[in-house]
Amino acid sequence: MSVPSQEAEMTRHLALVEEVLERFFSLSTQRAATLAPAYESLWKTLRSNTAGGKRFRPQMVMTAYTALGGSDLRSAAHVGASFELLHTALIVHDDVVDRDFVRRGIPNVSGSYRDVAQTAGLSLPTAEHRGMSVAVIAGDLALTGSFRLMERASANPEVRDALVELLDRAVFDSAAGELIDVDFSLYSGMPSIEEIVEMERLKTAVYSFEAPLQAGALLAGATHDVIAALGEFGRNIGIAYQIVDDLLGVFGNEAATGKTTLGDLREGKRTALIAFASQTSEWSSIAHLVGDSNLSDSDAATVREVLERTGAKKFTQRLASDYADEAVAALHGAGVPQQLIEQLTPLVSAVVERVR
Image (cartoon, rainbow, N blue to C red):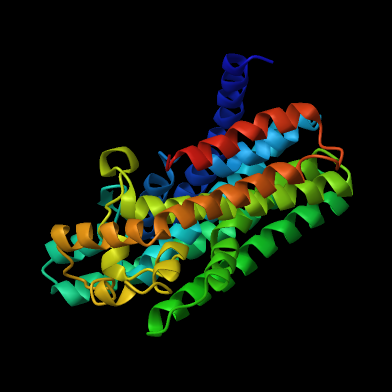
């Protein structure tokens, strides 16, 4: 299959996912309207915050499902939509944890309701509390909706139960990762690189890569060995992805990534990049800058210079490459079809090349 036809096929598959999400939000909004206008408005806000994403997790589901011989695309679309709603739930809640009111340059759920409250005359602290309170509710609705959509996948009871178990593990592990990340921010000490990698595996890799790939394979009737191999692939490429994301948070091109390169440094975010630097002799020269909420552009440039000079940047790039290599190795020798290997391999290159 040529690359253009693969892209066209994925576009058709994701259109089915959009149909599932559209129906879910339409029915939920209609249902909410029977209870209260404010509740209907909340569903509309949640819907708008789910729109416009790359649908990366549904892509993982559909890629594994179709390459492994699955043919019930509408059922697979329900599984893909389930993981997309889970993603919505987690980022809405994550924004509450981080007290963020903007995502992708526009107000998120918290920010939308904060702005409404401010316009109504409430003080900023009260308005922010109002926004975060509504976001908790919205995230809960997306989370329960994720399970509802998963249970609607057309599959025999045994497979459906296994799919729900996969989704449950994704939620369970992500919550553990979020808690560990919160704990990292509460203590002055620096966690080890291994601890940071494990946190990122739990918080991001499981629900973004590992579980969606395994869900697609499970629904397609793949063997245990293939499902396990895809889990290992997803685990390692997910870790590589997050390590690269952390690099871009400091060294990225803001115009290309849409992400500020000051936020992580001002937050003092615990990443493999920072953990490595903390073990070097030059750490003392920038330790007071990492975590400074008023960090200036010039001070950030100083931090970046030290991170490069100490080898922290190169080490982190190599660490991401190592996990990407492990991901590729997991696909071989377990009976994974060549077609699926060929479709997943470009993903590995795309992940690593983001910081070349």
